[in-house]
Amino acid sequence: EVQLLESGGGVVQPGGSLRLSCVASGFIFDSYAMNWVRQAPGKGLEWVSLISGSGAGTYYADSVKGRFTVYRDNFKNTLYLQMNSLRAEDTAIYYCAKDSREPNYPYNYYGVDVWGQGTTVTVSS
Amino acid sequence: DFLMTQSPLSLSVTPGEPASIACRSSQSLLHSQGYNSLDWYLQKPGQSPQLLIYLGSNRASGVPDRFSGSGSGTHFTLNISRVEAEDVGVYYCLQPLQTPLTFGGGTKVEIK
Image 1 (cartoon, chains in turn green, brown):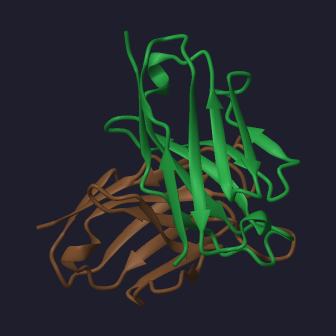
Image 2 (image 1 turned 90 degrees about the vertical axis):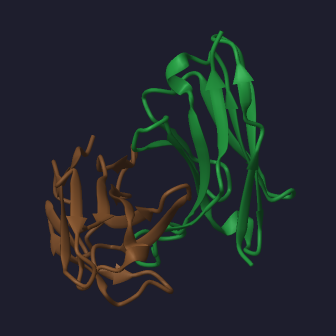
């Protein structure tokens, strides 16, 4: 079964740091780009970051650029999001999601087809 | 950046009746090879989002055929031919063409 399992969320003070993890199973992890998407309380979905299957390409929303770093360990089938200088507005559920854009978007693309259950980050003093 | 605008904000539908959600992009999502870069997702209450439609009109695996996507360029529509109780939730469109990927604001579907 294809599965994504996030962890690492918690309560942190403004200016603090957290590292989220997402363990993948049931598919060839390094063949797929991965996203982080977040959802603030009572709000809609916001894309945060995308990383290529190899890890060589990383992309960020302007709201997190310079503060968050996405990376992956393809040997451990694990995706990470290092979050520094956290702000109250970063409070959200963070989802990791499998992206089918590689190797040649859009010809083989079939959506962001697998999502984790989410991990909650609360930034508060 | 691509700005995605959905309408309506909410929808109350009688079971068995059709429903339609619109999504408009600030720029064309039509790829040079004829593909439209527009996905639809449903987030049921208390759950993670799930993929319904990709590349404008392709149903994802396991999605009932009462769901269909249409449109091209900047205007897209998600249609539900006969709404069922299990279809309640918030529907989002997404443009996956360019980073930053952008979602529409969401349309909440409720059952009358």
